[in-house]
Image 1 (tube, rainbow, N blue to C red):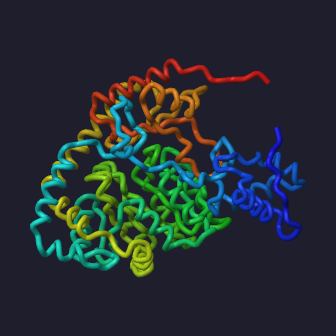
Image 2 (image 1 turned 45 degrees about the vertical axis):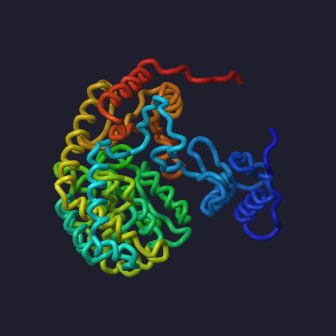
Image 3 (image 1 turned 180 degrees about the horizontal axis):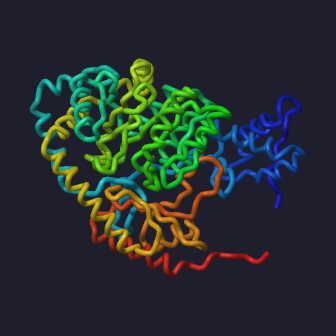
Length: 469
């Protein structure tokens, strides 16, 4: 089989010439969207250069957004009409919605409850009759948010998470993903390095790609991010920032131990990097550790969102930043969208001040505990991981089973799950595992059917495809 071989210019470093040739070939249609680039060793042999030269060229093309590397598969030209990263759409558009019997546990969504829409409807009715709120809603506001809103949200974070969020250091965001993007845009420049767990939230990976950053994967174990490995990385070249979800890693659910939280704070001071602490996935007090914001307040940006506790469609969150970063992050938000719509922030503030929010969160916590217990019962004998009241369950697969193959089999049987690959940072092979979003099921009956399908697939896996050589 012939492979694509670039025509290189005679000047400049070889890796740069290869990267420029890739871009020219994409522009000229010689490389089509979705087309796989040649394996690095084969192209190196064809061009008479080292494998490292080709690797560097591919990495540069990926950093600029022309190609994307898929762990265990290769490097592919990005589709101009489709994102290179998995979409974050939780449900199809209305005109595409059909009752096809599919159970979708691929997205980490809050468990459905009629109180979500009911509470929002009541609040919107109140707002329609409040002339002062409506006048404020049609006017421009500060990019950091209305002061009264920031005070109320800071007080809620204190009640909810025990977070000491000074309203003066709090910015209102359009959800947790916006908080991640703000932190990256304000603190980094294209080409810089950041670090995260080797398995981490795909939204961080996508935001880093958009900002043209290199994400370094830090190994994790049962105590969370291996901060000793991070220390070795820092001894070579410290990252600009470290992103971490300390109370429950996404996807594994593993928490960062107290000793490692303290070590991470100490490393941040010693090597002068920022900590981006993602606290969007809510857990009750008994399952949370000391916030990194409390251990290193001068170096930590804390992200929160209403998406996992009230409703994802509201797109309202908060970003608590050190005093030294307040103006810089505010300017970044202003450049992106000027401000977050104050009408939706007002709706959230009224919601969190009501008994509806407390009742909803109490029900959700109890419901997720019951779903976690149900999952452990139905998958007894398999090494599942997850927090007692967490949204997700991590399922490492027995030897001989492949995550992608089992995911495809379950999809054909009417169950959507996520394999490990979208969570992988760097070029390390993806572990053979599946993530189940227990919270996304319509109810416990649906979840029980889904768990039955998973157990059936684990006990009677499909044969692996093979070919003779």
